[in-house]
Image 1: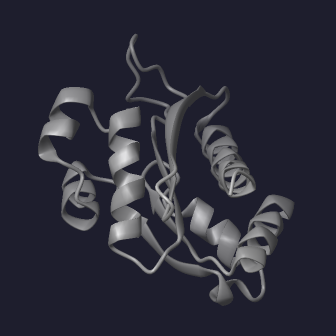
Image 2: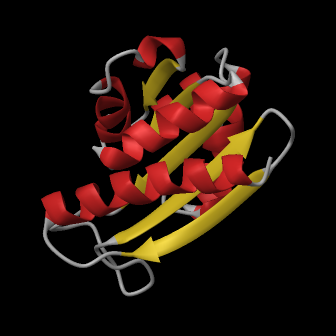
Length: 158
């Protein structure tokens, strides 16, 4: 994947290491990254935190945040991203939580709703919510691409 190669080049240029915190993508972002030869130089680890318990136990997402806003929220992905940094050797993190479908959506959060959080060790934090179209696979693929492009964008600000 060209985006993953671009992420690797940007990380290598800065001598940074990435980490992922994934829910609806189930490790897809880390797979895209580790498909690139040499990624061990700039990728530390992936947290696949599908359940709320995993988000809390592995990343330190507050139970109160999950209860108040739900797993698919900008508040939760912000805590996932900063938690991934705190529990790793990463310099930059991406967090993803969404509703890939076909079920699980609501009027407020329809299928295709995906929240992203990007954070780095300099204190930058960006969150964004997207609504993707298509079936489960299409939503997940679009989320992976958005996660990678967001890493590139955050590094461009450094």
